[in-house]
Image (tube, rainbow over all chains, first blue to last red; front, side):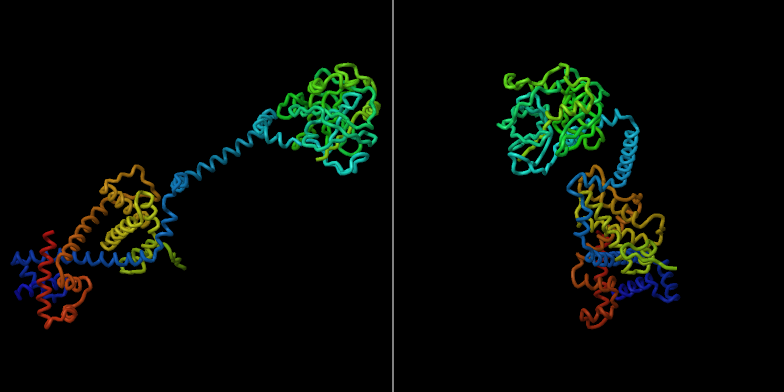
Length: 362
Length: 188
């Protein structure tokens, strides 16, 4: 037994290199002569190596556990764990690919945009088409805020103003629907500065037309109307003018029909190159012969010199909605205007008594 | 000349030299430096935080053994190596649990590390054998053996600690324990 213990101790010292050189020599002699001893040496070496490895890994694990304690696992895992949303997960996994795709897309957009800008007006018109509602909103209805002290019957200053013109001698006035929309009370004021109370007799929101009836007792008959309504549509390039009240006095605007359609290809209206301002809404648009070709109703905000006018055809439609016997000496349709052949200043002189400022209170 | 020492992720050379010199600090830096990377991989591939810890520690042991064995060459980044080993270990574990994963979410480049992992598995087997053997050895043998071979206590220390009357008694006891342990170890 004690021999065995000693042998084991020597083997261990031998394997650990603790024997003296002469002892090593003696032991190796023994090992060569005795296979049992040799086998014991080999087995013990395997065991010691395993034990050493075991000890090392054990120590390593202890050290790693100590390091692990210092890590805020939750904070990191909340950052790197798969997001509940599959989109975010895809984004995280494919950041590089997405970046490439995004920059490609951006380049493509820039190129498309520049190509689009180079194409002709036709192309840009189509683009406008897509934004119908937006453009409609940007269409600036030409109602004017006015702060004038109204004379006669009115006490408070009018909130909004537009223009209108007589369509019969007994006080029917045509203007835009959007001018009088939502009004509590309405007045018209003639070129001499006299106001009359009016009531809406007919409204047509689709064509943006309203007909007012002067209900004031002080109103006197206007006499026969100097203008008539043009039966045919006006051609492009036809010179036209308008009278209106963008300020407290009547103002003449001169221009020409620039397109047979209004904003966004609206066939109800003309596009007119004419300087108009808030307050011109509802003013008559006349050709050189004194025929009414339309009613100014708006302009496009972002485009210079593009105003719009409702076509005369729709004025007639509105007129026909008023019972014929209530209109005395109504406006003539398709007839030769008494103004024909007169110079512009003479025409304006005759017309201005029939053009009114519409004052709206609400 | 200035050497920039990154506090979060050590350079590969620092780690290798540190491990060869048994530096605990180097190991700590290595461990904390790349843990988030492996955690991310495991969490995104059907695992939880505990899985990540196990897999990552196994990968570090593989790297540690490789460095210690002396045949480690810095042919790739340690980061890539650790990632590849962790990935392989985790995919094997998933296969053992017969969980299949159709498309692996990867975050780094991947090396082929089959050979290293096979070597590691054999060593791991030895480790488990030793662990089981020691546990079935019973007291006081387990503590005596651990004190002598793992904590490097001398026979004199053990003699005093366990209150043996003389060191021959202690030596006899240790011999008996060792014989039993070797028997267990080579049998398992």
